[in-house]
Length: 254
Length: 315
Image (cartoon, rainbow over all chains, first blue to last red; front, side, top):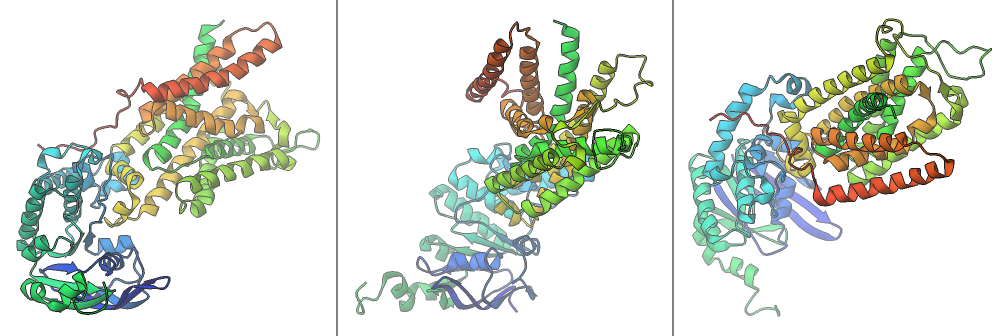
């Protein structure tokens, strides 16, 4: 019984079948890679899971609970954490506040906010937030507004922001894009650390060198469908996967 | 020129319109809701106050108005707040799904419809002529002090209450959520929060303050006439907020003080001819525009209006 089960999910944009009868399962505690050439539908799958798109058919279940038909905020609150290809942050808030703004707080109710009955809770959350900032290497930046961070730091902030919420599953959309090699190493270490702590992670990534060294299982998508899945070594040598990325050597013109 | 009287006028107007500026700052500066119809909540409060506290309409009088309940002033003020809430619910419910400029257009349209209603519906509050000489409350109780001073103090107290409440919200996790909503709604939603709830709540919570300011404005002017409740009020408040720096309640107050001070100083200049006064009135608008450009370019109050520290540090 997998943690996340995607069964027969389809989504089309006009005449384009972005995701077509896609099915795969993500096991509890696994570190899974989702790869495929441009336009294979990887990001669309993430948007379907997180509720930003509504699938036309199929079912998406987290821990046995149906996610399709729920609003994005409900899905997020049920334990789906995600990052975006272009990192998103609360640009005027400090790194610390970015994390604090991502979890529910009793101080987010008007009466409690006016009477200040949230202070103890806020202090405890601040300690946790600082731990997560340390984990992703932003410990020294906690008071820096997000709009002063580099592209790579923004990605790390987004990861930390989602970790702060204690998600059941974390979906990372191209976490290495625009990230310096040094930070990429840091990112890989962070992900391994989270994996060791038992977090379930799915990574969409174009940087196959980075991905195949990191994950334990790979799902390959082509034209909106799952082409194959398996462990990284099998995927590395699978001729079908090589064809999907590079085009057939002997067949039609590229 | 009577400097004492000028000071009292400035304090009163800054306090009344300062509350409206604070309301706009909470809606726009913090939550990113572009409200171009602020005057509607101000006017709704003002007219509600008048209709609740006036003597019942009589056949003998030439003034027409819908109702006159002859209620005490405090009940009129409470009624104004309720009117602000109801008006915010009516206008906010359908429009708060709208984003950015669409919300701006819709709120502006609502305000214009309301203005058009009070101008054209004679039976509501005497149309264009409006109601003049609205009685000032608690005159006898306050006979020991100059009424203008009493009103200035009351308005200032009202402003301080609004400022303290709003500032508490801004410095709390609620204020943080509003700013997060303004910065990136999708990031907030994918963190599991209902952005619509924050929008609607802050809109409904702040509108009654603008409406109560409308009742204070009636006490000050004793007039409920449509000419006092035009889109100009909205623009004055917007200019004040931009001058002082949106996103800061202190900035909002600095902005409205500058605008009111500027207007009242020009008004205090004695002119010999009507022509001179007309020229001065035109120059006033031009000068205000120039002031706005200068402030946006050099931001002289930037250090005073920086965003507040919020987090309770543990270390």
